[in-house]
Amino acid sequence: MRDWITIAAAAAGAAATMYYFDPDMGERRRQRLARRIGVAEAERQDRTSLDDAELRDRIQSRLDRLVSHPRALDVQVEGGGVRLSGDILAKELDGLLLQVRDMAGVKRVINAMSAHDNPHAMVADSG
Image (cartoon, rainbow, N blue to C red; front, side):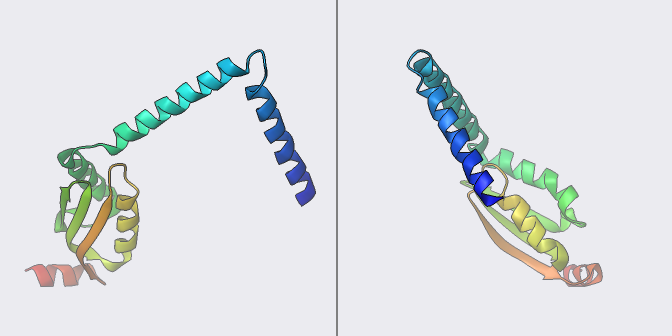
């Protein structure tokens, strides 16, 4: 089975090479591909060049879906660096950090949150 996958991959690579290096139409195809890559790169840069206030708003709006006590958290953003502080349930901590790290525009995440095993501990600690 593995040999067939290797053969299929090699055939696909050869077909793509013939398609883009065809003497008659290859140059136009290569230019079109380069434009598409350039547009995709420009779109990616637009997504990652959010200002800090917009990034903070996006993160805060997502907190409602990611954690059970979103108002117990504080979000600060500076230069694409995100600092999360406040109280969170321990079972929600890793998921929140992963989701925030994967957001467009986030360069680094600083975890200053206090993790609690149950919500009653969060109320007792903050009150």
